[in-house]
Length: 113
Image (tube, rainbow, N blue to C red; front, side):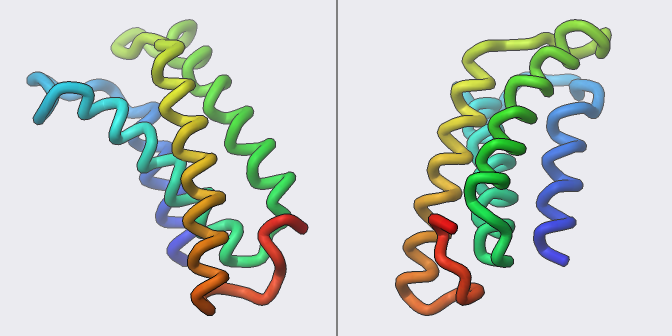
């Protein structure tokens, strides 16, 4: 359930029209990108999904989402720096899942499987 919610939040953040006003703080959008990729990655791995598949799908989505924003969504713009932030989120999600598993949280499937 949490994984589905995290993916839904990710889709809204990436594809909903941009709202009015500026960011809450400098680079807030990059922090948001990190978080919306970190959460689904960690939750998917903790749910026991294969890490190679999770990383490949989310890394591909990082690139695809920026292409879609640039080419299809008139109120959004693609940004290579957002892709980098997304990929940092994926990497941190792998790390978080690994650490939580080490502490006994999550499924019994190894992160590297």
